[in-house]
Picture (spheres, rainbow, N blue to C red):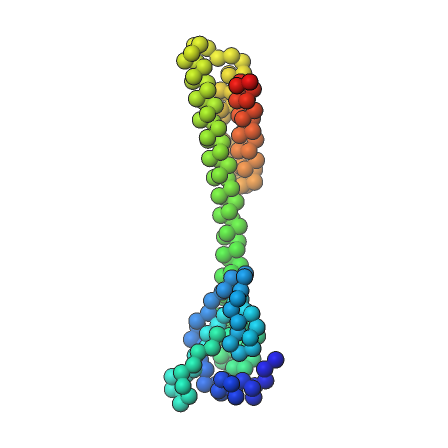
Length: 177
């Protein structure tokens, strides 16, 4: 762990740095290292040397591990940015989970629509050839003509599409064999 004296020696006086609100999330597979202590950090905060300082311009990318080197005002600003950064990450993860479930429903619906078109094609072809439908073809026609109900829960909708797709596939196999 770096001491304040070591920080001053390497980077200059901590009070000469300002946090202007620049921060970012490097993601779960973080490879960014803290410029001060060298730890791998996920949430990065950029502090820049005050332009009014006599020292040369400098920029540090730090993690929450090194907030303690800075004055109270800067620490508060960094802590607030940390809260925003972590809340944003949680919101993104929740949104990704929600939309991935919706994408699952859409992919199941597309599979069902594809097999439904195949089943209705089979029924039309048979009706065109013979003018009537055998019992298995009539059952296939009834199953294929079912419309999906509206579900509030995505899991229930996924199960309905999977079940209907399975039924249609089984009935088509039965007819073709």
